[in-house]
Image (cartoon, rainbow, N blue to C red; front, side, top):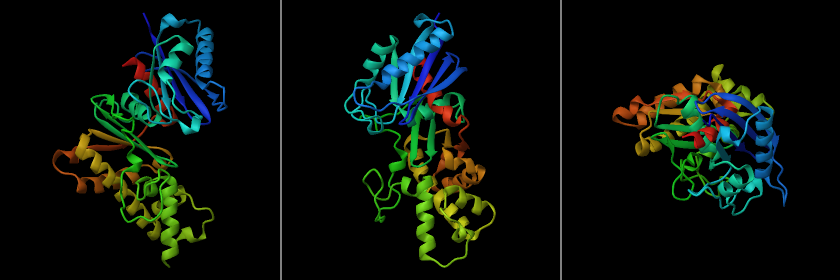
Length: 311
């Protein structure tokens, strides 16, 4: 009987790997460097590392269901990608190549989507089938789970929450090439951008004026300690975030919204305020939607990757 599965979350710097039981218990986790060089195969490195782990655990291919793989880019339904810039990939048949390299069935999905699936399976969304996860880091990522399944869409762009239009009057460009995306306001870099802009346009006193190299943590910490200016930035940030989540709610009607990423470490000051604004933007029983924090941290991706192949 096949009892185990691998999860491989491929990032631009490292590949996070995990070995799981089919019931969702993480038995081992480790990392290998992502070697992005022409004529070098990241997937071969993943396969070699998995084979080494099998040997170490005295297991064989017959003991494994397969491997789930998360990649930083849109993934088509056949497990192929058009491009993953951070990995140096153009058109690539990821599923086909992974299966050939390791000799096990493979399932492939976008890295943000697998993080959402991981949180749904064993994290902040555990026990629910309809979940939205949003990750607030350097950028804004996300994933939408409906009926326990990832919504990836026709082109693999499902769950790109960070690029929902929030401000049609924005004059600065987002990294995606558009203007006014949620990512420009709710990411760590977005919070800093807005803070610096508002500081420059006002004369309001704030501890942040005395802070060199302002970070999002600085802003949120200042708000927690009662800095009025920082409090206004917090209100703006959480209102923008709640508005974007209300748009998604009107389409998917999630049971729970999970907030993760580095910015979420500020804790309940974010979830409580987002919930207050969210309830004012939605209607009916959508107000019953829970808003909570992610619990798996950096392991969410490997959990979701494993679930891809276990489900």
